[in-house]
Length: 112
Length: 114
Image 1 (tube, each protein chain N blue to C red):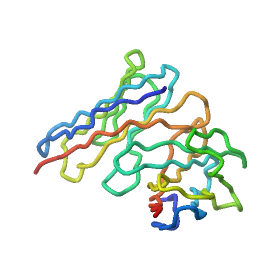
Image 2: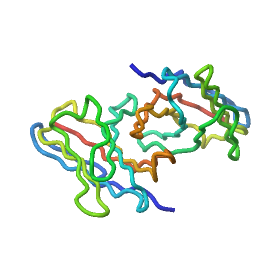
Image 3: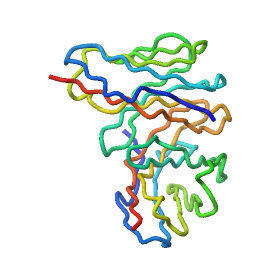
């Protein structure tokens, strides 16, 4: 069973702090990794993708990938109350059909 | 900015009835997907579709489910005989290609089976 694991939280950080969200995956063949943000009652919104080891930065967001450790993380700098949401880690199934396997999601609360 | 759209936003149906959920993927995308999310649970893959064929389907996607691209823009999910456990949010997603695997999700259809 291919798994993507996340701490469900909630992760609570004060406004302006760095939020660090983590994800591990079980299938070493996975090559594509995504972070989605999901507000309550809404659909997943793609915020970051990462395909190679290292860091990828986009504005206040940094995704980090370590394939050897099968670990993906998302850092949110200068967290804002509007960042309060559930963050979903998604990993491609290596079967080359585009199937994504999602984690349970980590709920982030940014307190003013 | 192009978006995936879905209709209806909410569908209520009685157990045993057929429902069709509709999606319009982003226009230059070639790969289409359906996912579902039962309240409080993970987003689960149902099916992927490319070149008018199913590429992969999950164990959830049994004989009660079917997908179709009836024209150049719509992508539909049909559930032939709904069950109570089919109640969930159903999300359509599309991607430009497999190499570009970024999938963009529509707003979802909330299906309630009574």
